[in-house]
Length: 429
Image 1 (tube, rainbow, N blue to C red):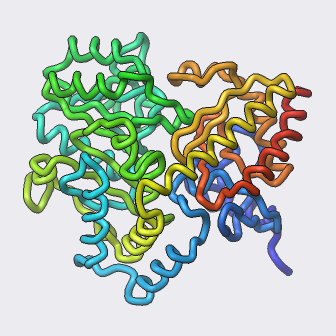
Image 2: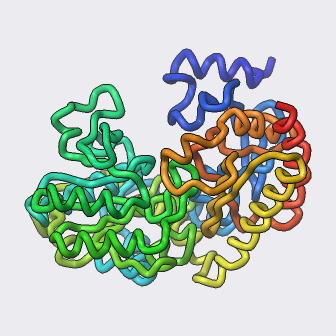
Image 3: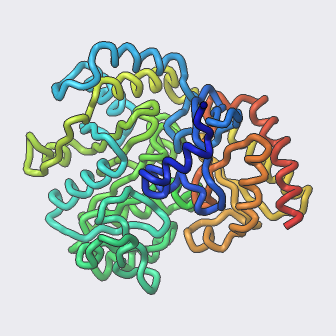
């Protein structure tokens, strides 16, 4: 007798913490139990209980071309047939590195790693080595992975030393990280007035994606570039989510900002665990084996991930891909706002490239505090009503939805028809 989806979920909870291998996959923020996915094709996933859903999670960003794109699957399959991992260099590593260095203004030299967490951890190690300083500035609501240095929340006041945001993070380590509000350049300047000679780097999501999609206000990124340069600190752009999602070459191309170091992941692996960090040549030459900053990884640059990433980026092909992608996201955002208005529901949407968020508020938030004041109860009703209609939206008001090239006008129209019915549920309370 076949095992049911419910039975699989019960088995998962017995052997995996919370039944999931990453917290965001749970439905903790919206209630209920998550479904298990059997397969994905294009803009759709099929669940273990046989439902087919329009997918706006898209593996949290990497699937620019949709699920199981033939070019990506073929490239990964061919590479796998030749060997899964060697622990030795391959041509594909060189080719992907050359492509990344050609696309990102901030990349002279790049080192492949396996996750965004590993990329940000390594970039900050380089920044501390290069400057001889220890403190780091980050922004409330920006997530840079689960390593100890950055699992920090703000203390009291606008610009203070952080306190641990997770059990198991030593308070002494948290004291090296200062947290300020996103889009608040004044708070950044205040921190540098007080602690500038001790600050190694500012790390920032150039378009925030881990409190929903929140855009940088005009002058914010430019101000960070100026403040860090004047203080002898480094500017680290965490483009794990935005890299090749908001533009060819990422947010640094979109906004014209040249960082000292950049972190990438998601898209450059085509759905496989691939990430990278890179920057100015003199900084990256501090990394072993050339320099004293040790960082290693047995599976870094693995041939299957390199093949998948190359195939996806070659299929994307360059800047021309992003106009239609953003047009689709904008059409969906406008349609959702119009449908919400028809039902008397306050809703704002934010779009950057293939990133899209809905906020149940009259105006789009500009920082985490404003995101936290949006109507999360309305979001929960919206999420479940959409799911009942066959649309899988990210299961948290603090997460970003993703549009791929497979989300064609027919998929967008299907989503908007479902949303029309979902807003009826939201309005009813």
